[in-house]
Image (cartoon, rainbow, N blue to C red):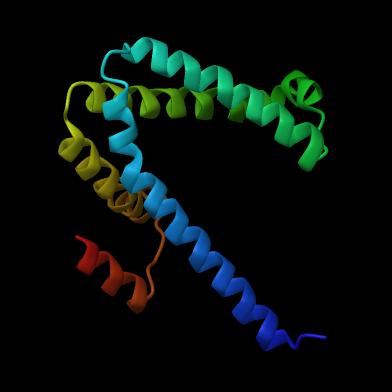
Amino acid sequence: MKTEAEASRAEAGRGALAAVGCYLLWGFCPLFWALLDNVGSIEIIGQRIVWSLVLTVVVCKFILKVDFVGLLRDARARRFLIPSGLLIMLNWSLYIVAMVTNNVVEASLGYYINPLVSIVLGLVVFRERLTPLQIAATVLSA
């Protein structure tokens, strides 16, 4: 039986591995988009929407055991799902158009700045307070 410290280290290791995997996938993503240079951005966005819907339904049904159709019928859930879905579609669309038009550096800079903008919004709109460590990390990132 694992101790709590061993379990915590194992979980941290899995988290670090997941982070490295995400960064590698994200780093190689522009290479993937370069292979699709003869495909229009509307087609790519359409494919992403369709396959994301399929994956979402599968995850909801078989992994999370959530009634996907029931969730869509819930007015309160729709108030959150529709705006977030539209924002994700806007995000994808801008990124894919940037990739198709060879603006990889600009898109990457936008993704780098996005969390910094979120921090500023949290400070200004929600009046959040940062810890000294968070301030140091934010200043280093900026």
